[in-house]
Length: 375
Image (cartoon, rainbow, N blue to C red; front, side, top):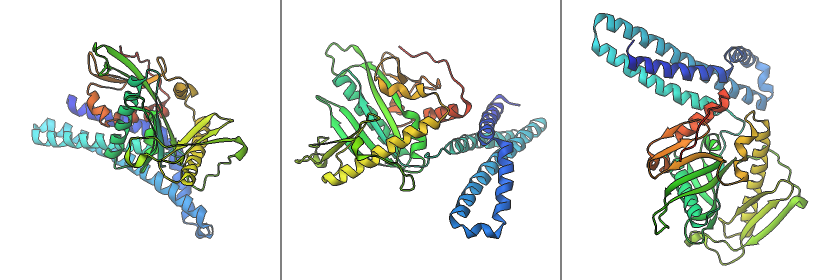
């Protein structure tokens, strides 16, 4: 088997192994048989809501199992075709079969990620908060760079992005910003970005052109729908109003319409200033608070160690999940998965999918990677 073909086969096998593990293959097959039997029972439709849930689960399992089998069959067929073509000296057939393996490998990677996005809230829209760390202008500029990176990532995926809250930096950049990202699986993808992000570069604000290290944090939580009931006691809330300050234009207001809500028991703080109406901003902030409380409950259920999420408690050295080095060399390195990119300009322009895919896979495998940070 040629090295190129074997490389694609190994990539397909790795994706299939992860898919089978995620599905719990034998259990998934038994469950699909059970669901097929239930669908054939005419009394199922006496309860429309239950029937819809059964049909959704059946469709999801059928799709995942069918896709896995199709990829496995395609891999076997093309591998056999290559062996036969090589024996006959048919280079054109070998080339075509290798191209088919490449396409299968890409499809396997896509299906793997789709399967991994099966969490309770993964399909939801998401809120994404960015907060500058200590360091004044440097960190505030870095926070603004991150905000552009996530907007570009969302645009690449065809998502809609709304600015919910914005606190401008003292000289440049931003102190904080909150975005509402709308699109299928927005939370499922973006949730892997929660944590501290570190930047190393020659500072544009340093007349001596020295290297600076800056930190900003990212926090991601899902938008919840009306079917999820989150109880919030009014007595647990501290509500402040203030004058909106932002990027100018429609983000500037002349009245105290912006709303900040502090949930005293948990210490969670949310804010909204996107609307000129204080009433609407309060409603938005309440929705954000409920989403944060819901996300906290989801984290409790996750098997992932809580330390993965403690980065938000301190925005500084030793807590980062990813480093972005622009000087003296070019490298972005994820400190959880070891995934790297030597094209930081592309990453900062929204090319985040490889990092997200690796982090999602790690949640399934539980594999911890010993990764050293970069200087």
